[in-house]
Length: 72
Image 1 (spheres, rainbow, N blue to C red):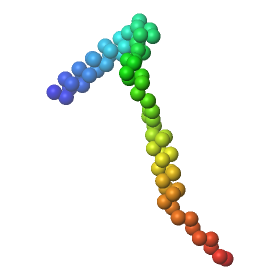
Image 2 (image 1 turned 90 degrees about the vertical axis):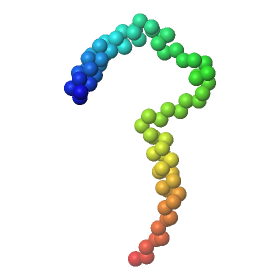
Image 3 (image 1 turned 180 degrees about the horizontal axis):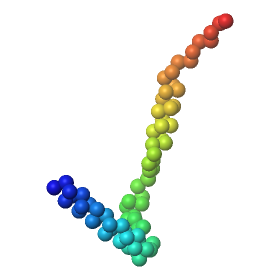
Image 4 (image 1 turned 30 degrees about the vertical axis):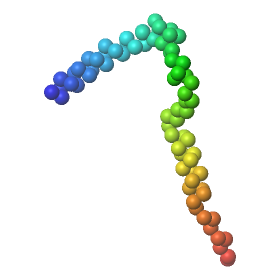
C-alpha cells in the first residue's frame, strides 16, 4: 500500500508541476484576483515569526531585573 501511495504521489506531482505555471501564465492578472471582502481584512502575514521574536525579546527585557553594580 505504501508503494502505491508513493507512486501515486510522484505521478501527481509530475503531472501538476508543468500545469500550474502554465495556467498562471494563461490567466495573467486574473490568477491573482481577490474578493473585495477578503481585501478589506487587514493582512498581517508574518511567515518567519519576526513579530513573535520581537515581542518575546521585549518581554524578556522587562522581566529581567538589572544587576547591582559589583564593588571591587
